[in-house]
Length: 156
Ligand SMILES: [Zn+2]
Ligand SMILES: [Zn+2]
Image 1 (cartoon, rainbow, N blue to C red):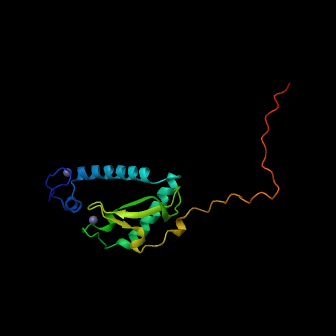
Image 2: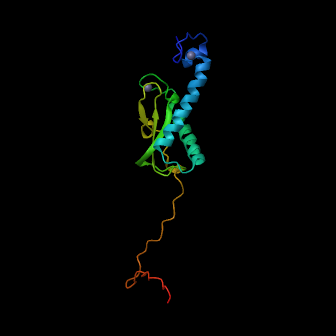
Image 3: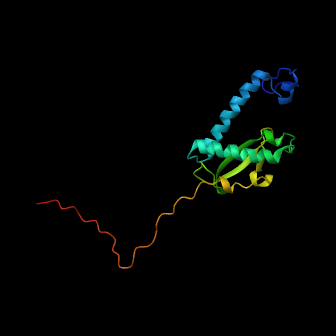
């Protein structure tokens, strides 16, 4: 077994299990984290980063509750997937996001994507932000005239 990043042989069992030597493991984790944040920034409308992170943590808990012992078709454990969302009209309304979000897992190994809805995990309805008060759009009573903006009196 060799390190996937630098191709040096791996000896210690932990490194073999994660397929990276200790130094490379640290680097890929940092790179992954940065890619992950970039992805979210690019594809999602986040209105409150703190609330969005909290929402994603909660969704991840629900994912984990469903994915123990489950693997991607490539053999990678589902638990090592990235949890990603993007703006999508049919998605779930989620706290911290300005648009409904399509939630899915992406396998880091084969890039296979698995929609949250197909996991059989708990629905996300309770993670919706509180409803925004609907603005009063009652039509003006009949006979009402639109306000005419008069030219300001320029004086004599
Ligand atoms: Zn390495
Ligand atoms: Zn996979």
